[in-house]
Image (cartoon, rainbow, N blue to C red; front, side, top):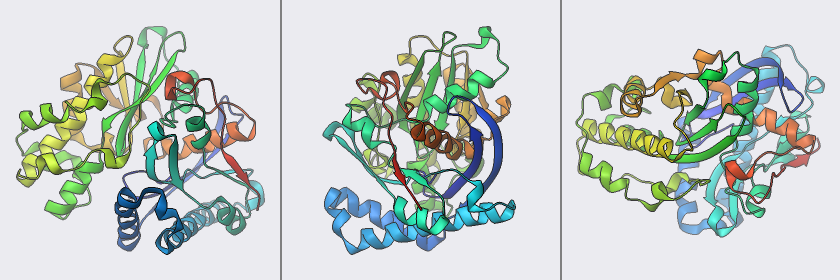
Length: 361
């Protein structure tokens, strides 16, 4: 998994049958080099201008190859560190890097070369998880809800603890809501870490706001927060999804570095809380995954504003740093078995949809 935060590659081994996780295996995080981050950022900037015409450029071909080879290196390292051979692995689930996400126009684009990864790794690869859902009228996101449900089904939780929200604060924030009866809802809530990371990178020479220390020293500009919340996305009914490019830094450009960080953090929190209020019933607990759960200031603000118990997913015994990588291992299994990857209540597709494209080594 390489997410919208553009920090690196997460890999995780799973054993499962598509319904349950039978065993959690080893994990690996491989950070991108500064050159790799720059390449991806340049590609995303060009994609916003050229859209699908970008796919025919030399730049896209070169970055796709480099991106895929980086994933092949991550696979090789994970296997080597754990005494495994390619023959020990049935499938690789390759999410790809989201370049543009335009479900309203009937397409979504995750950069990947499944054929190349299969050849380099010697392992069958499943990629392109989202296109079939979009073709069926869905948003193509979020895709974690069925994995979150599988994990909750195996957790030792009482009925009184439901409904529960699993909140992923990555580059974009998205949630999964699960009721006591097993009903599942999923959608993107709004900005996550992407704009905050971009802001502190530009103004504080840091890749992210560690522990939220920068934001904690700033003052929130509530007028800007309220202005951003007027975006029609927040009032739109779910299921709904976002592209990383749908929000930018324009609203906070006149602020100081600390005030900008504080305001961007408040926008993330406000979007999440607004989304919680759209649910059939408010959750009794919010369990947070993604990099945002490590932002102590953000977590405190989310608990304060939502007035809901808010904890990292480690409180459930889950591996918060690798949940998305695990998810696409789980979805690769489901794809290979022809099982649904999404539901009408998670993406808005007309029916439960399978998906993914299989590449043989």
